[in-house]
Amino acid sequence: MNYENILVATELNSAIISINRPTKLNALNKATILELHEAFKTLEKNNEVRVIILTGSGDKAFVAGADISEFANFSTTEGAELAEQGQKLLFDFIENLGTPVIAAVNGFALGGGLELAMSCHFRVASENAKMGLPEVSLGLIPGYGGTQRLPQLVGKGKAMEMIMSAGMLTADEAKVYGLVNYVVPQADLLEFCNGIGQKIARNSPIAISQAIKAINANFKDGVNGYKTEIEAFGKCFGTEDFKEGTTAFLEKRKPDFKGL
Image 1 (tube, helix red, strand yellow):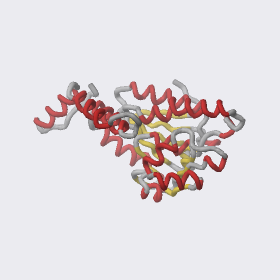
Image 2 (cartoon, rainbow, N blue to C red):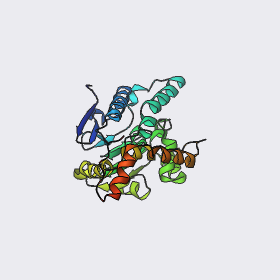
Image 3 (cartoon, one colour):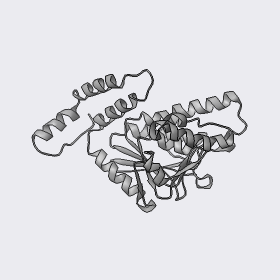
Image 4 (cartoon, rainbow, N blue to C red):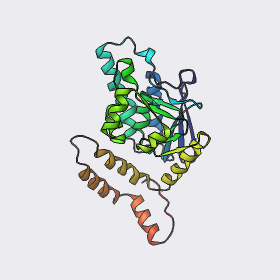
């Protein structure tokens, strides 16, 4: 599929999705959200792709926010529909994707950009990255899951402060608060993320998918995470990957997982 707002590159068992709207600092609009949804859906079906890295084109921004010009005149109903559709198509979709997604935060990740990074399974930031949810300075609140995911990552108190002050964290501050896992020089960002990706890719994709499901269950209202873990654990026993992993261990060799 040809995309207008994103770039997709695959190499061996990994894929890199780059949001490519340089004149808008990679700001999210409806078209970009839809293209990202299609790209993730397509890569999820590709059994050769074991990990996905999401980043922004250029060296200034991961995603500098949502494209305000697109919704400045929306009504109450239109605003709610924008948030609901965006969460369904992209943010919740990424969070629940069975293929691991790493956010390579290369510069500004503000508003919808930080919400996008937080929907990924974990984050690595370049040294020049800055992150925040400035929506209240526009008379809004975060609408793509920011009020939910930020407290889960940095704690309720810090999330309250960040959202109410519309302030930004530096990359190092984000690491201290657990918002990102690592901070690396910008020139090394993608290589570093790919290194982690290759460690992930050596393991069973089915087991990883079930682990994602079990971990996410802990953060969903009305879902028993322990029960989800038990069910996911049991499912693994019926896979070829389980047979390969245990056989390889007993034979003292490296496993060759097929994702079956």
